[in-house]
Image (cartoon, rainbow over the protein chains, first blue to last red):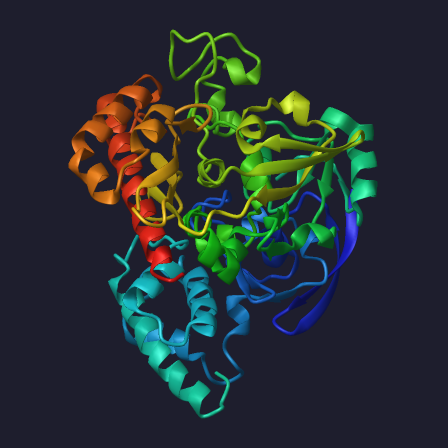
Length: 164
Length: 338
């Protein structure tokens, strides 16, 4: 059984005919070529498939594409703006928070969602906000430092009225 | 997921109930999907009809008044429960428990109705069909043996919900809607109900009565890591204090994640009557050992025999004691507010 759905992905509208059993992860990767979201465990335990659905970080491996009909979806590919990368991406690079990079797209999106909700997160808040994203390489320390640094920049931008 | 099923999206409760009554055991309700989709991917009961109920917006509300208490629609997400001011103020143990389920991403989809519908969990059962090929089918799969407790003739796997023990400690009721109308059951009876009795029905809402002003609630959870993992042990406590003396008039103490349903510690609840917080503290070891003795027969060491059964039981005792202590503290904090 297949169904016609509309997905708004990174600001672009897509009309798709998808088999009802396909997960959002599969459709993003295979139908839309957005391979930033990763198939880590495919069962909700690693967070590598994290995307933002209507602003909330969710596991795309546990959502059927048909469930996301009409939703606003942000993937890692949508973060950079043309010629410049997002402050979170820059912080991750500068702080050495990327090793193999597999967890990184999910990690950055989870961090973005955290900072949108909490402008001045404590280290504990950051740990909790990223607690659904596993990293086998880094030991998390640099990731947390990068998010902490990005949050400071975030605050300033928000205070100036500028949206990051 | 290569499995084929038909997908339906009813937009009203009436439509949903007729569909469920019609398809019966061939259908499954899809709410948050964080339990069901994992089970489908592992080949543990693939439905022929998947019914997505997320378009039934009336199931999405949190309503509270100082007469009836709290009414949670089945589709209320755990992240919404965690962040709800009303729940944090009036039922902090529920906000706390909801905020410790899974991970942030899971809580953004998982629903309270779905959480209470979860069934017992075992490491030998919750595996892919490929993995399970190496073992004979167990009792839960319709076989004749238990792959976990080899001498057991019944399935004794634990119920790993964090929300159900809290709802029990809050005297909650579940309203279940079926073709014959609305039925109200206690949360314990609901969580013990068999799959067959749930066919054709959905959870409509959960009702939590208002607590007495001098009540305190608390929840404690222990797990291997501080996120994602299921509980190895959890405990929920509610105490009601007398205004003048701060003595406990009534208590509810529930230990979860040890057996197929959460255990209400009635003996401990009786003991706590008349106690002030410091009284409970002065008999701490005695309380803990009494709890250990009660939960002992159910403690097996958690998913994957992660702990020794004896340590598992000790952990249960300590967790329940901490929940009792924090519940007293919560009640005292409230009394200083009123």
